[in-house]
Image 1 (cartoon, rainbow over the protein chains, first blue to last red):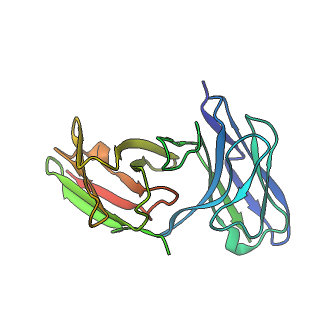
Image 2 (image 1 turned 135 degrees about the vertical axis):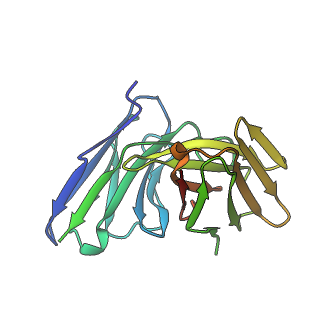
Length: 117
Length: 105
């Protein structure tokens, strides 16, 4: 099992360009998440999908869109990249709700490092 | 609002014990988690504790939970250089900023 995979690993964009970050999991998990990690701020949830066909905003959704293409894949799109979106982006998946209601260990991908100039 | 707070840095000598502290505000969390992030990698679950427990021990790791004070700690006994990483506390919906543990030989 590959676990959670993300592509690309690195990307440099110019302000205003668009791109899609891809994420896939092979653990048959219901829930998937997109986070951004910035120095001194930990992980902040951008969007999550509790199950196939549903998506919900997290803490910092502005400037992003997501698509839960099927149970395996959850993509994050930046329509018009801004320097403030320079960050490391992590995708994660978990069984069940993924939050405190029951044990929902999250499995993380290796991350995508994005630089917006 | 809800928050999870951790100190950002901790430095210890090899063989000593490390204690990483965390405070949280969401009292509804059923589980609390510790994740470890090694350089250039994603987070990996290290351990977790159910909210009605005070302590959980797992080999060199001891998790203490003070639910009244909403304080969580992770103790690593006999800390090794391979334990150098960033450690994240997490509750219901939020992660702390992470504590960078540096282990000096």
